[in-house]
Structure formats: structure tokens, C-alpha cells
Length: 157
Image 1 (cartoon, one colour):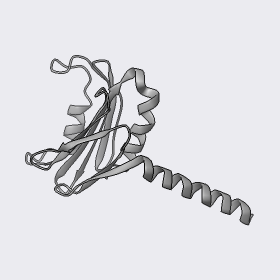
Image 2 (cartoon, rainbow, N blue to C red):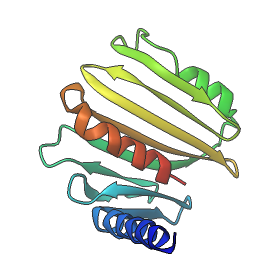
Image 3 (cartoon, rainbow, N blue to C red):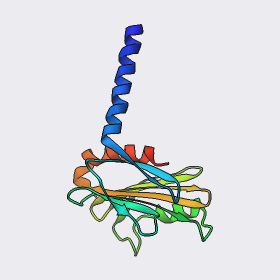
Image 4 (cartoon, rainbow, N blue to C red):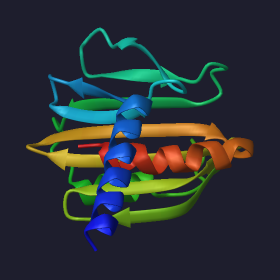
């Protein structure tokens, strides 16, 4: 039994070390959020001039992760923003197809397809500030980016 515990412990430790080697953390002090991104797949493009976030691109620029915060100056409810973002095709976004959406207490997720790409958006409302991340990548690379999306979404705080 002790041997099994030791093997499982070593496995979990190795996974943790591996994850630290693969992902870096971007922390935004202005809006106090953080997100993990795969350091050898997505490359930071530099923080925005106003310090609200950053864009990350793949080497060939076909995948992009945008993360930013904003003050809720219009006092918009999370539910209102969720309803707005979870609408499918509209005149302004004629190629947007929503395939998944969920609204929780202080966050929501909307994902689907837009202009031949997969998109995944997570929004958090905390202390009257919205924190967003939007990840977009080619549908042909779902096998590569779907697991990455899961890791990014889980890390976003």
C-alpha cells in the first residue's frame, strides 16, 4: 500500500513539474487576474498601453488569446452580458454559431464557431470589474488546442 502511495505521489509531482515547465502565468496587477498559457505555443505580444491586458499569438498567428479587464462603468449585469455574448448569428456577427454556453454565479462561458475558427470566451465579474479571455483557433487544429483551452479556462482567476 505504501508503495502505491509513493508511486501515485511521484506521478502527481511529476505532472505538476511538467505543467510548470509547459505553462507560464500572466498576472495583471491593474485588474488582479491571472491566466496560464502554454509558453512554447502562445507568445505574449506585450501588455496594452493602458495596462488592462495582453494578447498572445501562436507562431503562425492562426491562434490568438486575448485577456483583459475592464471596469463595469455601465453597471451591466453578468446575465445581460451573457445574453448578449451567447447570441448566435446576428447582423454584426453573421458567422457566429454558439455551441456551448453556461452562466454561473460570477462567471460565464460561451463557445462555438466564428468565421471558420473555434472560439472560447470566459468572463468573470468580480468587485464590479469584468475579466475576459477570448481564445480563437482554426477548426482544423482542435486536437491541439482543445486541451489547451481547458487548461487556460481552469487557470483563469
